[in-house]
Image 1 (spheres, protein in one colour):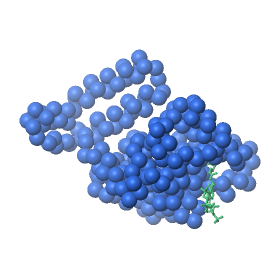
Image 2: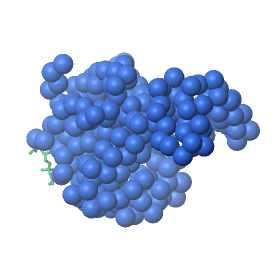
Image 3: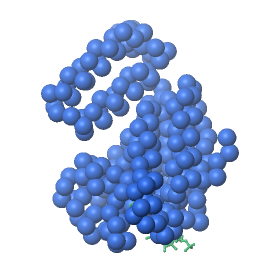
Image 4: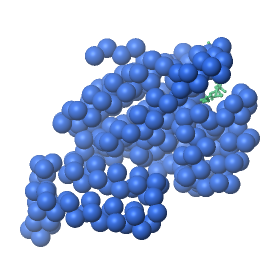
Length: 257
Ligand code: HXC
C-alpha cells in the first residue's frame, strides 16, 4: 500500500507510522486522516503486530490540523461534513499506540498525541492548543482529553491563552508518560512498544479497554468492568502459561490465546 502522507513500516512485532508532510510541519489534512485510518486498520488486522508507534519528524510531531485546508470553509461546509468527526475513529484503535513526540505537537497534533495510549516525548517537545489564536477552539478532542489528562486549571491555561508548554511541564502536568533525550526518543518508544507486543495479546487489549473505561464511567461500574475482564482472562491458555512460568522460574511463551 502506497501512502502519500505517511511512512508505514514494521519493526519486528511493532507497526511504525511516521507522519510525512515535512513542508507543512505534518499538518493534519484529510489525506492524513484517511491514510492513518488505513494504516491503523492494516496493523489492527495483522496478527504479527502487537503494538504501534506513531511519530513525526524531529521538528514537528504535527503542528495542528491543516489551517490552509480549513481557512476557506464556512459553517455549512464543516457542519454538513461533520469536520473532524473522522478522528474519533483514530482514537478507537484497539491495539496500543505509543506517540513518540519530538518538536511541535500543537492543536490537532497535541490532540492526535492524546488519542494514543502512551506519550513519550523528547526534551524538545512542545505541546499546546493554540486554536484560540485562530479564532476557533480545539475540534479534535482537546477540550475534553486535555482536561481529563491535566485537570481543569492547566487545561484552561493552555486552551484560553494558546501558549505552548515544554516537555518537562507536560510531564509534571501528567500529559506525558516519559521524557527522554532527543537521541533516545525512537529507541525508547520502539522498546516500549516491543515490550507490549511481547505480552499476551488478550490481556494487553483488555488492559487498554479497562483503563479507557475509567474515563467514561463511575468507580463502581469501572471496578465491575475491570473485574469481569480480569475473570475472563482465566479462560486463556496464556494465563496458565504466565502463572506457571512464574512458578517454574522461567520466561513465559505466550500464544495470544
Ligand atoms: C497548515 C502549517 C501549519 C498548519 C505550519 N504550517 N503549521 N500549514 N496548517 N497547522 C506550515 C507553514 O504555513 C509553513 O508553510 C510551514 O508549515 C513551516 O511553518 P513556519 O510557520 O514557517 O515554521 P516556524 O516559523 O518554525 O513556526 C512553527 C509553528 C508555526 C510555531 C509551529 O508554524 C505555527 O504556529 N503553526 C500553526 C500552529 C497552530 O495554530 N496549530 C493549530 C491549528 S488548528 P509555508 O508554505 O508558509 O512555508 C487545529 C485544530 C482545529 O489544529 C480544530 C478546530 C476545528
